[in-house]
Structure formats: C-alpha cells, structure tokens
Figure 1 (tube, rainbow, N blue to C red):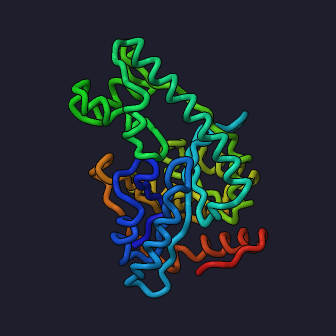
Figure 2 (figure 1 turned 45 degrees about the vertical axis):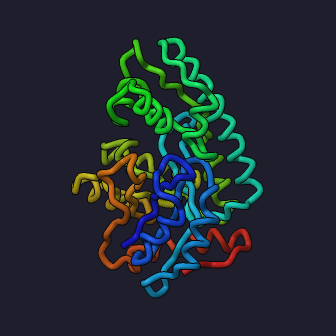
Figure 3 (figure 1 turned 180 degrees about the horizontal axis):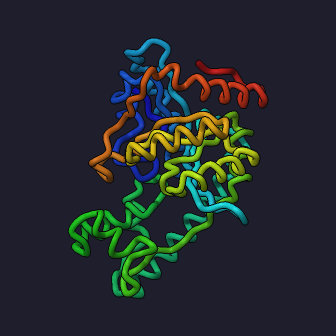
Length: 296
C-alpha cells in the first residue's frame, strides 16, 4: 500500500498528522501533502519514527500540494511537491506569498457572505482552522453548524464553488503561482514536482500527452497517474501518457478524512517497490543536485 496524496488537520483534513502516521504503519510509502503549507510534516515524521513501520524499508516523505495557475499555454492544475525539505528558505518564502493570497481571499469571502445576509465573524471562523490554513471546507462547516446548509457538500454547491448559483455564490478566486516558479522552488527544496489528479486538468488523452511534454520541458517530473477518482480507462490513459513522455507515475488517494468520507487512505499498486523505482531515481537526482541525502 502507498499514498502520495494525503491531507491532515494542518490544512483541510480532519485527521491529525500523528493519527495518519499510525494508520499508515502497514504502508510501504506515504507522503503528507497538505495544501500550501508544511505545518504538519514535523509531527507526521516524528510520529512515523516513534511508531515505526510494519513494512521493511518503508519510506515516509514531506510533501505539499500547491494550486498553480499558469501563464500562457497552460491550464490551471494542482501540483504535489514530494520529498521536499520543509525548512528550505526559498520554499518558506514562496509559501508566505501563497498564504498572503489565501488570507486576502478569505477576507473577500467574508465580505461576500455579508452581502447576502450571512454574517460570519472573522474571529469565529478562524477557530475552525485550529491555527492552520483557513480554507473553504472550514466555511462550509460553519454554514452547516449555523443552520445555513444541511451538509458540507450542499454548502459547497450552494455557496463556495465557481458554479454556485449567482445569487448565493461567495466563491472568490485567489492567487495561484506560476507553475514554472513552483517547479523551481520544489527542486530547490530537494523535491520532485508531480501533477496531481490529471483527470481534472484534461480528459483528452492527446491533449494530456502534449501538455505533459511541454510541462516536462519546464520542470515537471511526474504525474499522479493512479488516483482514487479515476475510471479504469483514465488510469490506462494516464500511465500510457507518462510512459510516452518519459516521466514517472505516482498513486494518491487525496484523503481528507471526514470531509471526504468516501475516500479511504491508501492506494494499492502492483509491486509497489518496482512501481516507485522511477520516482525514487528522479527524487534522488533532485536531492543530489542540491546536496541532500538520497532516500530509499
């Protein structure tokens, strides 16, 4: 079992980094990839070291998920940074800029809710994030708790997505860094850059291959070809595209705990060690290039 796409209470998940480490004792490989921050990584890795693993040679990695909005020629997509050093100076500066964009967006969301007659106290909504990154799931939970929506899914569809009804839409776009800048920062932190859930980027196999070839030339290293929401034919298309372009594949669940209860932790792949060999080869090249120890 492996999983390179996992969220904790450090962003919009409901399971603590410590509990994730406990649940993953039987996994060969796992990375914590919270949105736009590495705040849970130290706790996660410490818990992994303390609890140990039931699998010989198990690997646990620091990671992150970034939302990147490219310049000309790209479409918006989510980017995983895997095997990064969370204390890297360039990465920390980059994330401060992203956090500033998130904070500005949250203020605008509060203003839009006020405009439609729903007053959300800023100090109260902040408590929903428990000191971590405030995000849309926290707004959705507040709406449920205060009787404005029967459940999280309905809260999102009614208020918090680009396709919400115009009369109730409180969705606000936010700052998304350029992908090439994100690639460079991830590499400087000793990690590899991986496109998350390509099914949301494009479902056209030809466009996928063409797009991946361009992104590879700009610094993208791999693709989350095996993803929990994929249809079987999508996974086949993604794996074929990855092979043709000359990249590596990863597998991820996009686990969020109770916020996405239908998604379990962990992904099964055939011969997980063989499957991840290209990933580790690329990761170790990136790490060696910035003077960091290799893994696996």
